[in-house]
Length: 335
Image (cartoon, rainbow, N blue to C red; front, side, top):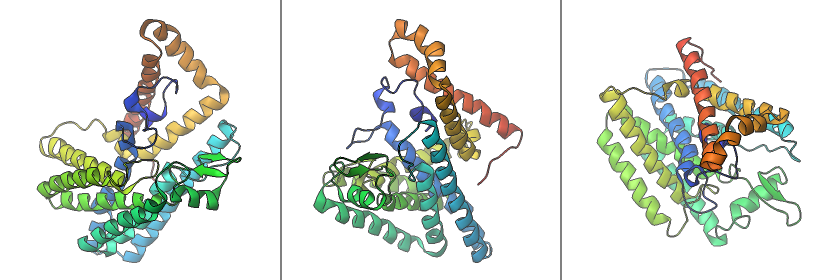
């Protein structure tokens, strides 16, 4: 997220580091669903075992509600700062952390109290139901039912809103959060297989999700902005493959885990880096740093795209250093 969200120049970004314009899936479109998938994995590895070990369900529910609401509140606060930093005409209540918090609030209790078959039933119901909801009206931007409902409920407080036509769209809106819950539940199932050492089943499920997602895309296009059902399965399949690969290489073969420092301080990295961007942008320092530190000397030699990428990589490296220091000193930001 840090890499794809912070290029030096949005006008010169390599294609794989851009979201698909509408239908389709680039490597960048895998980032957010991977994050939500891992939320589900963490539920299976961190919450469900505590219930099985005799933890008080009411205490777990209170902890889930408290944590989920804090994640949502953190997202709302970040957007408040962004509203101020970029002098936006409207405050936007929807966002990445808000969706993560809502999915966690729904998926965690389901994982606690439902067996595997019931969880699969929820996944199927959410994905099939979303398909049936959107299919009659099609998937065109602004005209699809998800956008129309979000616009009716929340306009003009959306990512995009045209006051002339009265149409809007938010990629993290309310309606498209429904299939995103299914993504988190797919992570729950993957986490349960991982916990029980059923890696073969995890791999087979990953291939099945990829195959079904590809076939479903013939009727319901893969679309991150709408979080279509085919997109949820397609990205869930890649996430399951990545999880299995990481388990085999890191847990079983002892390969180093270079992303660990980011993982144990994910909220600190995401929220902290966002605040840094907003403050630098508000003061004008962001453009100055990019122009004088990268573009002025790199663009004449290598073209405008490489300095934009180099700036993003430098930003990631800066925060990698920050979270590594935090990890070594035992500083962990939990919400």
